[in-house]
Image (cartoon, rainbow, N blue to C red):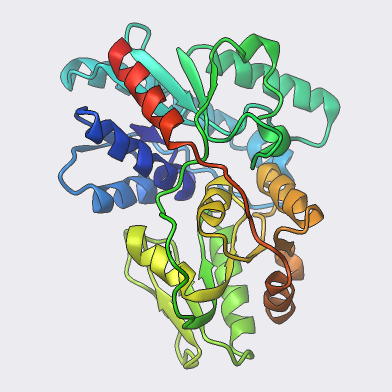
Length: 353
């Protein structure tokens, strides 16, 4: 199981797949890098964990094209290195099959290889660039035996244009398996926090958002819980932190679920894994897309337009207003999960390994 180490979302949405693989009798080997691998090791301490080369993508500007262009050689090298390493691991670890969550190099020609993604149709602002990027995206996906999409195939879906419709060249390999979340539905808990802030994603934008939120939260009266999204570190609380702000380095699983349910509003990035978690729990949310990350900008705008979640740009953050406006909206209400589809996808995969 090889999720991309680009924030924590790819790792968290792999957790229910790992559990289903184990339930069906598979022996699972974890493979990722950075905080994503640390989170999986914390969640599954008895499973072997292998370190893959990190893509180490940073979002320094609000231009997606520039952010990717200057880092492209580094990304290509990481993909080449991970593919070479995966071929070695298939032999040394006796691996029969691979599930890659957005790691382009994690496949092997003679082993069953699955590509897990919600970005079948990558959203970029320029038509020509969009065609070129998606042609490359589809070319790489076609190197895998199947493409699993964590969403529903119907018009009632979460990803919108990111994975609907499926282009002809991918239809034979595409399989919708329903949304994936490490969290479970639960009865509404007693509210302890006015808001929970869950931080994630590439630097330096993660730290910039954390600093902006702490500065504004100082002037609010409500209780704010900030989860830094740093499973490898202890919480680094600033000096003279006011009593209405609580900071923890990391939360996962039942602890994170309980904290979200005990909060009136969720605040965080508009990554797709976050959207799936919110669909599971039904919480109202203030979404703040990572500057320059077109997928998050698309999702946040989509849900704002549909009166589901409130959205603010990072450089226009107004925490008090954002919490107030988020409470007025409905949150996600609907059926986006299909446990039977996940069970069948895993069973078919294991049978082919």
